[in-house]
Image (tube, rainbow, N blue to C red; front, side, top):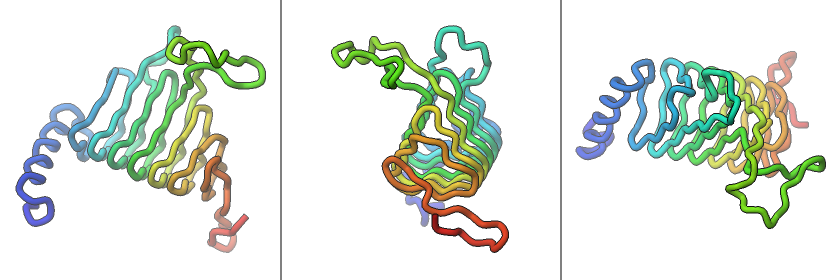
Length: 197
């Protein structure tokens, strides 16, 4: 361990391991600093791993009836500076791998669609929060600096390319890239290959 992380790095890793086993016994390793807010609304599955500076927070909206707002499956690994914020529902499946600097949110400060729209001169913090659930399926790989916005459903076995902004649903077994993210490949199980769309 000393050769790989150095003396100070090994001490930080050791302290992170103690923290993990004291507060998140089922987790594999949560590197410090780690910010979790309203833990009672967050369910973390077995073998969870988190990098440095991750932030997972829940601020349930009035009238929220469930006991969980963020549910993270088994064997999920999130790397450094991932921020996940919920007021209603974010579900992350099993075996999900996330790179660093990813943002996932199920809410917006205000509404900006064709039916109901907040005025641009209103104060953003005072606008009513609008929630749309987010679901990330099993076996998904999310690249560096991806942003996943409210109301998105990412299917099983998907790959989301680095720097993508996911604004719409991504079907199972697809590769999506860009801002906004678009499907560029889909897996064909008959020939066992990724096919360009």
